[in-house]
Image 1 (cartoon, rainbow, N blue to C red):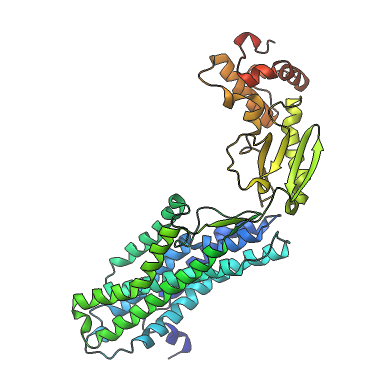
Image 2 (tube, rainbow, N blue to C red):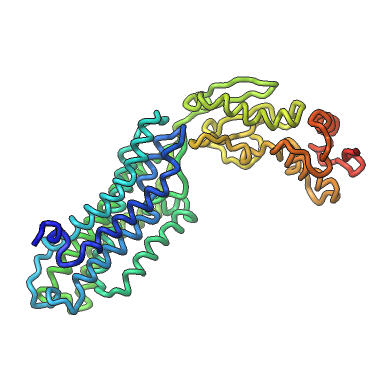
Length: 423
């Protein structure tokens, strides 16, 4: 018998190799775009060691369950009550194989992201605890899938395991902070100046370790019991599950009651670098200093088309400086808030730049049809630089002159149809 065959005996190697390849492919595909980001951030790259669980986790759990079902089915000669079992020895052998391949492929797929983040001079420092929580989460998923297959021993449970683990993403997305401590993926990525809290990281490390350990211990108990026929009693089986589930359930209840803070703000508005251009103060966090010129340019394009000093705001601030304040597309203390994305883009859209300039968000009730159309045409022009609708055929200087003449009416929503440009 070859060494290669002995790794997977008595099942075919495809039971392990194919899901491992799937895990590697899906994680690499989902992080591929990040490899070319010019401004990577370590807190975000570190977080993807658990964020990529969303598809990899269900694959690992379902295939570990399938492995256990195929080896522990009631019709298998080695699974009969009279067959000698080694208990923890069997579990150790199986999980060494499954964890080595499933978790190993997960880690291997994340190495390109980690290496390019380091090579590209990322902002901040690596977060080893955060990375380790993702590795432990994958270990826990594999162990839970394995123990479910050991207990149920039916192929029908395999797709159910996959669906349940994939369903965790819904709890992450809609439960926000509530389930963050016990769900591997969080509802959002951290950004510059925002890091996963120490209490969260420590709790998650402990929780995923306990889930893994409890699952391994329960699986060993179940396999050992098969040799004596002890698990022919449903009451005994339920008792074993309840015993080993006590610690994980206690931690889940603790997390739901106390709800650890997911993130801690490390940036401050005092750590800003500013420059004033045409009466607008542009400020970025000191870690984003290389992005200041780009932010000025991106906002400057729109402000140049607008052509007059805005009365709605007098500053544009990097979102990192105002992490304690939710973004709502409105100026905050006279400043627009802009996201500087790691992919090199400046998010002027969510800053509310154009709605703030034309005043449409402050217009209560309905506007005359022609006026409402003008607001849309003006927004398109400021965004693209292409005159359309009522501005079609007008030169940029003519549009700027019209805006300057009517900016107060635009801002307080008193523009009338007779004020529209006439060609």
